[in-house]
Length: 219
Ligand code: DX5
Ligand code: ZN
Image (cartoon, rainbow, N blue to C red):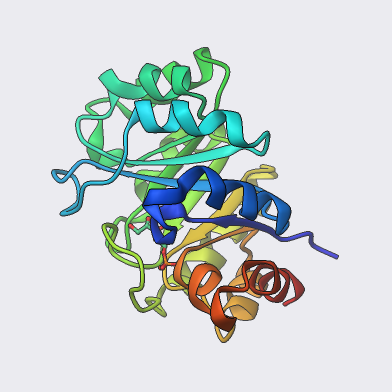
């Protein structure tokens, strides 16, 4: 039986209480903490950077799954590694040389993810697929929480899963954006290993994050 991991996105958390929110997520059974870093340039929103991640590190031992929606990304990678990121996920469009950026993340002893936007083809990933630990499939256009899941993502996940099986690669598929109690089962069945959720986890069932994580895991 596949063990699904849940990576709650703190983009939907109370930014005035991020330390306490992270402790609540750990107590509620989160497997990872998804940290959405946005620069107002790669995406039309601005969130947090290395100093805040550094200050949050002491609140939990569970891995920081840092999603860098910033461009250019290469020159900032070390700052996020030093701040306490455990997984550093980048977008191909945000670097001049995806393989060099992947190598840099690995040289810093961090796990590396590559994130594909809805309109970005799996073909962008295949030249470097054997070098990554994780693939983050965006099921919304990045920038904001609370958007609607793009249904075509299911087919993309299935195609990627088939490719990983064909190449016999043990790489985790993480899906990010618009995940809820209605679509999570089909996302898992299509091949997802990790679900990112902000709105569903923080807002459903009167904000009962433990219950919401359990429901997503139980599908
Ligand atoms: C969007 C972020 C997602 C988003 C997920 O750019 O990358 O992680 O916060 O939030 P929900 O679950 O609200 O779609
Ligand atoms: Zn994200």
